[in-house]
Image (cartoon, helix red, strand yellow):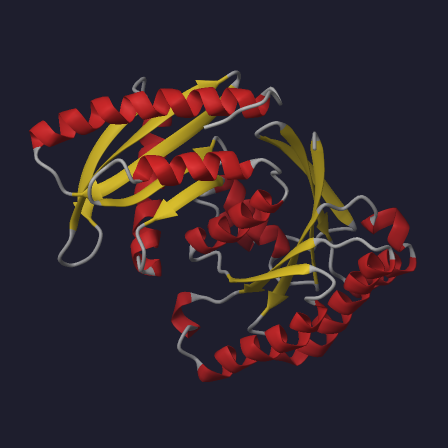
Length: 317
């Protein structure tokens, strides 16, 4: 696949455009979101992901636009490779309307015998309401009604919020992985390499847009701990971009009683930038030097694999 059409669809005010802004900017995006106006029809943007050109279609969710999309489904929905369907879980009065809209879209692809990956973003699941029983009940209700389409589409659920950037990155990265046909090669390498380092907590590979291409986490790592690792990546990524160094070592707390050590390295394959991150339990200074040397060797192997994937050549591990 050399290009892909990715659609962000949902009712008006569900949070589609604000999610895309947060994903793109990562820092200091609140003012831009506060000034957002409703999306007029479809806003199209594009970016490069590995060897694919990704074309984003942000579908305005106002009723008059939805009516037009559904009246001319072939014009608007054909050739779609991936859908992010966004549901505002704080607006339970519109759940029926949102599920009905989803059903219309899902039925179109079923009728055309197209089994799509659909990422359902249960959005505006903000930190302050995560224990709210009414919200949790609403999420269960939406899942129950949408899951009826599982025999016909590959449906995945993610609870997301612009106040939890990792939740957005996690959902978006997972979605992109569904249309990257040869991701298993990288996933196998990351998992195998992570096992070569004692006390590995995580190993992750990101593209230049901050999309996670492959992730390995120690079993039973909690969501707050994963969030902490991603926060470290964002901070270090910014430092690397602002400096001439392409390697950054760090030490930090992952929770109240566990310190971690790690290294992040940026590298180029062709004209594309990548970041690889290794997190382990804290080590001494001497061990850190040994770790860096070993890590560099594996990083070169990873570059070779990516070169093969980007050139569509045959690659084996």
